[in-house]
Image 1 (spheres, rainbow, N blue to C red):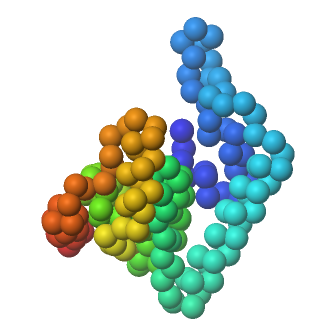
Image 2 (image 1 turned 90 degrees about the vertical axis):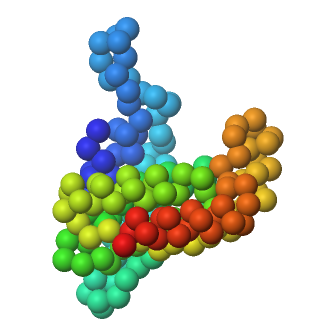
Image 3 (image 1 turned 60 degrees about the vertical axis):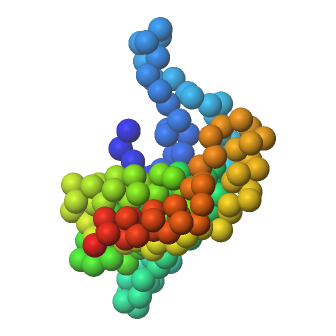
Length: 168
């Protein structure tokens, strides 16, 4: 799937949710069709984000996209990384936020750094310790999946420093 299309204001989000079906020998919808209203809301969000980033670029300022809970973050990070690819050609304008209280923070940064190198754009990174510890732990326990949070403050600090070193 060509993810770079996701920052195109005419992109159809429902095109993203298709997977190959070996049984049918073709691409099939992973989820039911998104409504026209949902597609419009997505395009409006992308249009607004492009407007914000273009304005930041014109004013020679940075734009930092904040991090949210782990169940929202993959979509936010994907869009932010594609915005980096589109706008960070000459210098870093768009920055993604990486929460170092998460066990996979270093892996996320390393993966995104590699993509920036491969696609030849400047990587914009804001490191934070994190803000949703209690919510994330409670959700993991309630839904029965592994706790995504580092077990101690010291482990979070270690992750922060290792991730910072990777960025440098």
